[in-house]
Image (tube, rainbow, N blue to C red):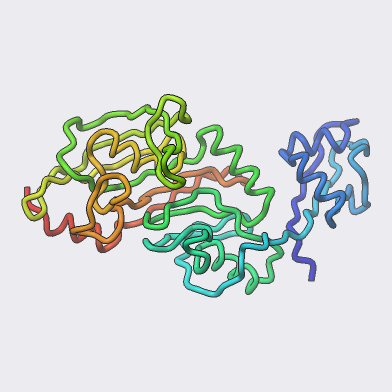
Amino acid sequence: MDTRFKLRFIANKKGQLLREALQEWRISKRALTAIKFDGGLLTVNGVERNVRHVLDIGDCVEVTFPPEERSDGLAIENGDLTIVYEDDAILVLDKPAHQSTIPSREHPTNSIANVVCGYFQQQGLASTAHIVTRLDRDTSGLLCIAKHAHIHHLTGLAQRHGQISRQYEAIVHGHVVQDVQSIVAPIGRKETSIIEREVRQDGQYAHTDVTVLKRFYFNNEPMTHIKLRLHTGRTHQIRVHMSYLGYPLIGDELYGGNRQYIGRQALHCVSLDMEHPLTNQTLKFSSLLTEDMQRLLNESSA
């Protein structure tokens, strides 16, 4: 059984080169190179053609992408996945805290990517895990995975054009003064650390919107429940920006919080909105806060 990923298009311009049509259909040059050399196929009305073929209106073009290979460092593992949505193109998951999105030297096994590869193998899918929206190991909530390199290419274009929207909820130390604010502060790697980031003038542009949901006390300590919207996706962006404001996340020891009340940073991706990369249908997903964050809110006092 041929499990290679395939897409069909109908030509709508007379005399157009297949190469030009594929460009309009957002097939990348990298994908075309892989199709040519790594086991893909281009057909027009069922006949194999090259990119110099001249199309006629109504021609049926089928693009067969080559099978994908996992990187050597990505082992196949079996494990649990909380699937929120799935089709032939994307997979949306609800990630628990304390699970890495991709394997690392410190946590080489049981990552979302490892388990997704195992899940794809069970499905007989000739693909690997392409992470569209990544979450830190101790951040919970929604994340999106593309099932194929071409879908990853399309979602990357969507992200660059601000067409994938994520909202988070967090609990931070202190009472945030402003009800609504935008943090625009560049983020870069801290010179003394390979992990830690900081706001710095030579960093990458980073923009976070913050809305206060509730100010409260937990064991007489002031805390604030906030909602955040990311306009950019820098590493540790929310954690760095909130620490920069003087309100580090509860449980985030790396950026000034403490773990007295929760065993990880209190951060959860509650919503993910996007257009489907193939159908352009609007997709909206949501996720409830995890029990550890709910406990802080439920046991709080005004």
